[in-house]
Image 1 (tube, rainbow, N blue to C red):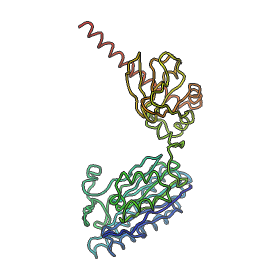
Image 2: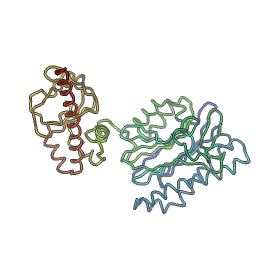
Image 3: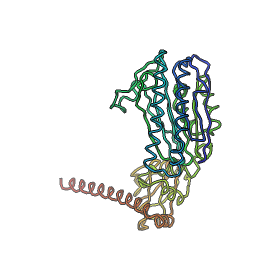
Image 4: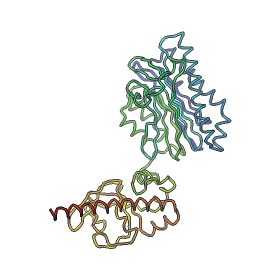
Length: 403
């Protein structure tokens, strides 16, 4: 697995301080971890070292299981790796609790990420965060374990949860106050180009979310740290970053962007990435200036249109019947029987579309039987819904005529 890694660090110029030893970065194992102790006093930093040393040693001790999973990603090994992460937390919780009993107010948060060839494994406790950037979209994968944030998500088995306040940070789960604590853990499939950021709460407390998301998605991985440090304006920052393939950011004109555009469209519901790639390969991007007639009523239909940006007016008999926005598709009936267009389509503002010619559409379906079933089924559902609406409209008109 090609993996590019980097770190984000700024010690901070105010009362809140950060330290490089809060970051654990082991590309050999695909391991990233970040720990934090609010207040960052010597006892807290000792708790951080206990947590990260425990994680490193436990992962090293189970390297053979990680390698077996990489070779053969069997379900039982997947469960075992999640258990390894939870065991690392359990060991760290016990050791930090024993350490904290002799000292007051030691509270540690911990986030772990394991990247193993085709899957990611995540462990989380506290108010740090794990972010995923996929195809230009930023996803927060973890829930903050702070008062008011996770109560609705984690309601059962509260017996081992932590309730601790340090400064202005109130935790419902953290390492230190109790010998045991429930871990939020999950696994997910990886996609080439996925970017992960494992960060302490310093990051999202110092930089507004809108700026964070823009930086995460647009910066080269090597430039992400300096950009965030500049945005933080002297705030403390701690994060470990990794990206599959390269450190290049997602670009809107790349092939990956087409997948991001296609995935949410109803016509391609339930299509997997491989099937979406087949659709993307069949498309051709086209731009239409404001007022451009895309096709005219009564003319033969030979293309299916997918609207990426802008808007398109659908006009029938000189009357506008609907304005379509991004994510819409139109002209699909031409794929079935090559009829005359029942309405005209006109660009309402500068618009960008992906166009699928009829011959490319059928070549795609012939080469992908399962994709053909999914697309044709979704087209059938849409046609059925249109017929039901038309039937209801005709029934209403008939009732009005008789009344």
